Length: 305
Image (cartoon, rainbow, N blue to C red):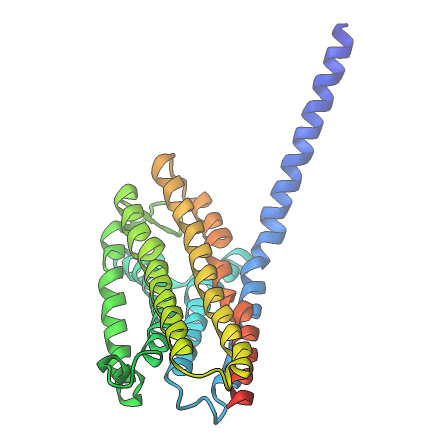
């Protein structure tokens, strides 16, 4: 009896050790390539968006301009906030963000500012589509003018900067490891959940619903002569917009889960870096996920016009 129990205990220990070894192998040999794969996928999506939005038919479309600028910001995000993880894990090359407290705070600001700005350009594209569906006499339609783009870009830069200013205040250099870490975990979690977790996806959803309402009104007001031919293009564009909303909300939700987790549990710098790759970085390939829908939708509009 004792011999059987001992044998079972040995088998359990061996199985546990095997699982731990597998997890360590995945962490050390596989996960380090995840940032590189995401960077490559992000660049593929970005190139597709550039070829789409720089076509002569779309260059003067304000919505396309906002989405293109948002894609450029996504690429900057890939280079600044994601690719350094691969260089550090694979080659031991660290960006000079962690040599001092001030550089660490700058890195914390950019880590929050760039993704926030990217989502704001998606929001601005949704606002632009809403303005297109307003009446011709509405002052909101001024947002569709090309001369308004520099003003709106400036406003988005200022707003994203103000919304991210909490990061350098609540982050600081971690002693003994080349990372930044929270100094006030709960406060940082609340700020992120409010400004990036809920506010932006909710605003995008509001303008999507307002746009859909205006489209339905216009359908009732005009005749049904060209309604059947236009239904496909409108529905496809609505699918693209809702894809934007759902992907933005989905990846924001994952960050909400992470910040909620680190705020109620003991915080570990290493686990934070792993969670950053798992939860945040997939949204950097949003151009790849949505690029095909954007291209198909815009091409359908062009064919129907």
